[in-house]
Image 1 (cartoon, one colour):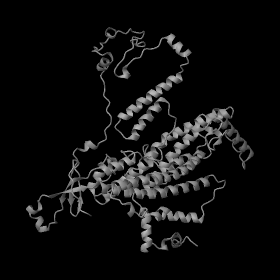
Image 2 (tube, helix red, strand yellow):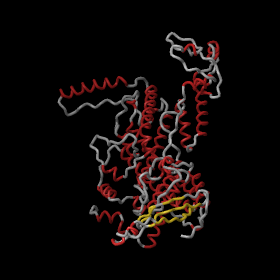
Image 3 (cartoon, one colour):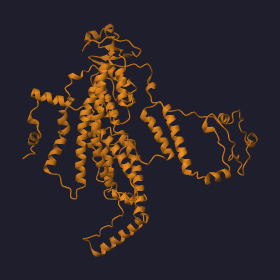
Image 4 (cartoon, one colour):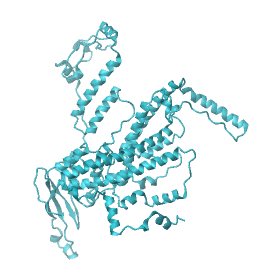
Amino acid sequence: NQPHQLVPSATSQSYPSTMKFATPAISLIAATGAAAFAPTSPVRSVVALASYLDDLGGGTSPAPQPGNFGASHAHALGSGGMADTRDPEASDHDDPRKSISAAPTFEEYLQQREAGVSSAAITGAMEEEMGAEAEAEAEEYPGTQRERSRIINRSSNEGGAKRLGYTAPSSAALGDFLVQRAIQQQLYFSALLGNEPMVHWLKRFRSHQHLDSPRRGEGRCGFPGTYSAAFDQLNTLPFTAYLEALGTEPDSSIEVSFVKPQRRLSARERANPYLNNQPPVVEVYDQPIITSDILTQVLNTADALVETWVFHFNEAEKNDLARLANDRAEMRGLPSARDLEWAALVKGGETAYSRLTGDEAMPLYGFDCRACDRFDTLRALSLLIDEVHALTPETAFDVAYLRREVPEEDAIEGLDVNVNELLLKRRKARRAKFEQGFVTGDDVAKGEAARAAAIAFLGKFCDEWVPKLVKGDARSSLVRGEYRHAPGMKELRPEDAGSDAEEAFEELWEYADEGVQKMRGGELVLPGLMGERLREIRAEVAAESKGTLLGLVAPELRKARIEYTDFVEEDSDGMGTYERFQFQAKVDGTETESYSTAAIIAEMQYGN
């Protein structure tokens, strides 16, 4: 705690607060009211009809009178009494949307058609024009970089140039999300320690108030699940730009005022109206804001996140491969005694993660792990869509989740002959009705239909699940485990509620070996096997994400630490936060073998 020199700056603010008894509760007074922090929505102006006609005609247009419409307009009336505007005169306007281009004559149209100007070329030119307009709109849009990219994607969707489905961000966006969670974790720590001035300064830096918990108050840090784990919430992109902005931000000071706690009065003193009605004493002090120290705290948290996230990606990759091997096995094994032992340990909190962190994980770590799974699932879903788009009618059936024909239903065995014939007759009739919508033709025609159906199915699946996966489930694992729905039923959740990755996989798993209903070619698509392929891709993406953290994010964090803080590289031991804790525990002798897995199992009387 070295003394800090107060540096006055233009960013100094006043933060009056109140303090009751021995617990200080700092209340910040902003320069604007509550309306300044309310989300603003774009306002669309309503243009009156007269002014709109003035803009089109360039002059003053009289309001049309009933029964005298033709007198105020030069257009001829049609048979229905409406003005004939099907052949307007060409005009140029400052606003391109109000300009009217000259229509080609029929002879010119024939010449263009004979010259080979196809509708596809015209459509391509229109799409290029729409793309240029979208890029211009994105440059003028005062949002984040990712929000501007959504404008371009929206325009390409409207023009029909973008393929169906979902395109996830690259693995480099994992660094943006990691810094976002580091800021939120630092907000949680500061609020937990009662450092309200630091909380409010950090979340106001570059307008990140939305990263704070909406249920947090003075003296309350809020439940960890209330710190939103949705993606794309870092306003300054990429994360290196945020670290640079924080590192180059000049030091400042804020004025904090708080109510000094009054001395508790005795019964005799409370009877004295003078002593009992004394006004509160307000004390004011200057709180220095040393940005290099704040950046150091954020980087320390980010380094710990890199260490724990890398461990989680490694565990996620192993778990996905093990689950995949079990799902693809011809005969799946039943849970063994060791599996039951491990399940009991997990229920008691003894997991691989608790061994890594020593049961001292950061409060938001559980939500971070689920968010990492959602990130990998979105990237795997995007890669799966690319894989389906890369298929051709000839290679469509090279993948396991597309089939050429629907297999015949097996005959019923073990029933009476008459009953058997009756059921077979009903099943054949039902199948004949069902097969009326089946795709017929050769393998190429079926392959084309199967590919189109798979793309359409993934498009609908993305429309439903991508917003949920981006938002995430804010409930803790304990709360999520309290609900037990009946067999064959699903949990009732609000439509705008987020979800975790396993719920999306469960949606595909429920198809089992059935195809997609009410879709041409849907009988050739197997969403259950598509889910297995999605899990296989996610295991590869988890390995890629681990490499991104170690090869891209961690070096950038270290670079920012060297450049903007007083960090000395020679003093670093090269170990991570939890790795250093474990090493220190071994040196101090506080870590023993009494809490090994075998000892815990023996203590629970599961061993031997």
